Image (cartoon, rainbow, N blue to C red; front, side, top):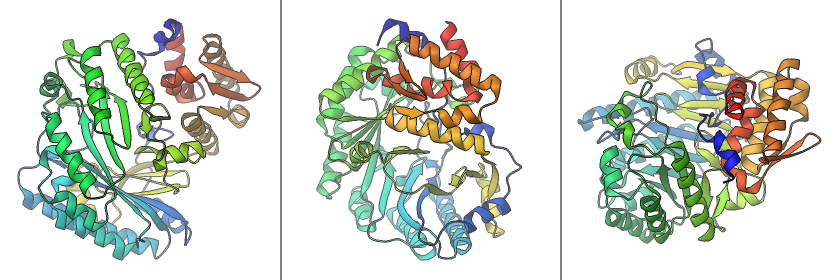
Length: 446
């Protein structure tokens, strides 16, 4: 990375998995509002489904997810009954409308649940909403708690996309985040998954973790490449101990500084690209024959709460506590606490706690940011037309500074990100985001 660009690395920019971000959601949005939006879904409109499983066997200190450590499976079994009830309530609201193209189980730890219970949830979706043989069923897995027959059971249910939470292979790093899992364990899991015929396997890797060094992370990336996953996501760890008390268990003195974080990100990118992976957006990588890479090449790539995706659907329906749904510019988030979530569902309600209806102006900005992050280029003419005069001036000023630093090329209303500046894509997005203007102005002033 050019030295002049490093001043941007220390700023916290939105991840832009939604726009505006969930920080702007409020309680003015109701379950009735969400029900009205569900009514607008077309009969054959493609939709994606997300199922949140909040349970984990052990607390990982870095984690930012809505989760809870659960020692009694009976309580998890009760959760299965509740989420099935929510699925049935939503299915009645849909009344046959919408055609699922993908279902994603996230968490928490989805494989905390027994295979039979996961199968019950999938069966409930099939009965209440409908599934076809072409639907992609994806699941995030904690390799430490995979049981001997889990992979076979999951593939028999229909799961065909698997994601392993790897994070880092170095034992010192793993100990510092309370997630010990050997390379041999991951290797065995990969072997089982491949033996079951799965050809879409993803790894999640984090940089910015305690005790990471250039040498240790180089080794982690080499080991990941040796196991040949079809996709790899390389995320930057966000240390937010004020918001996430569990992160206070991490010794801040052992965290890599801004400069080293940049080095680790670049190292992963270079090694993965050299190994034949295609860069997808700014933090995903995929083999050339993977559907995600094909979607990027064909300009079908999208960005949602799961990151970059090849899912055809624009509407997303979420189930479980804290799950977020999105329908035509409307966000609706479920109750975050399990008790509140369960009570709402047991009363036959859609458990919506808060959300947001995008304005026309926000929809224009959202489209431009999505295009920028997915394709590294966008046209901002509609954004400039919709902007207030002050916002337009600040936006152009920020873009001029980014252009002067060589991060973007700006031709008329078209902007594109320099190939080697991919890691600063969110900085460029923030430049056309009125909500993030103070952040980008601070970064350029450093």
